[in-house]
Image (tube, rainbow over all chains, first blue to last red; front, side):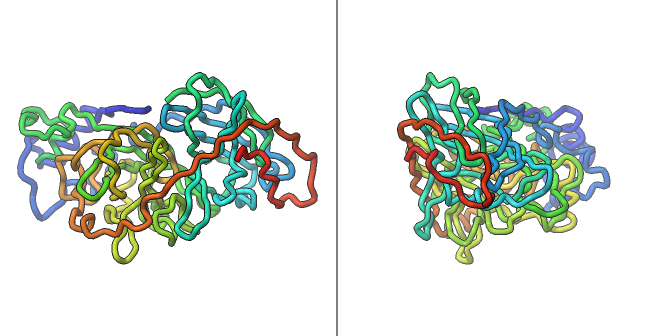
Length: 188
Length: 248
């Protein structure tokens, strides 16, 4: 589990404080006719008072494995990069990215209703498929992130699974989309 | 002004509610980089979504989050925050609308109890959420900064203390649930992170529709089968492959 308390830098905080209080540096009642942040937003140099970079950029997730798309899938020519298999006592999150040299639609193999196509997590004895739910129209869809296109740039997608046994250190991902790949499991 | 105190102006901390980040700190319960779903030529920049709170109130669960862009924010028409919690026409879904640039749903997910809680609805079918910042001025507001937004989700059980969150095409797992609205609030529908929290429209929350917002999740766990080797080639690359990999 990620639980952080991000610090607004003293400089940024001070600038923000000054901007919000009319340069007094003290807490004072707001002008009811104006919104403090709106004043900031109209600033010609918004970065002066903006938040720290921690809210604008996050470290890039490193790949833990990659595997080519199957030639007989609509992902043909793509590369799947597995970014995360994070298990907790509550659930398991799998994040991957499919990249392709050309921008293409996700193709017929990607359909949130075709949940059986989504990667299956294989342990020694069991196989865990993506969680699903029944839609209000009676269909079944996966608890997963939608996808519309593949590009050369990675675009992480996630899907939620049941929790894995606590002693699981790796799983083999199996899908009609790509060649089987075994990846380590991290604990969240 | 409380919004100033929120970023740590000294000398006023004694008057603050307990949720105020008095030490110049802003609670972050999880973060994710979110890319665009679309196939358009102009790829919108990746945004950072930070979850700041999942708060239980009477009749709803308020999800506080921020969206941040390093550099210029995209065209207002492409802003990813315009439809959060809306999803497709069917209420309570976890998927994006057809044609959505970014995934436009929001939900709290409780896998152990196999339930998800999606956005409450107005009579017109819109999500009960922060008014989306879509004007040209808002484009400036969102550039090189992160602003806080909120969406009202279906109420969650009293005993639920940790959940997973789906927001903006990303899952953020292991998020602690708190009670009550975050304070201090500011008179701004999209305050910059650290300046205070947006005011929740509790009137809209109270009158919201809750139908179809709670979904029952289904697990599919079976015995592992030996994987089958992939066919070398197929004349029909778009044919749907066998779902034999599924254990169910």
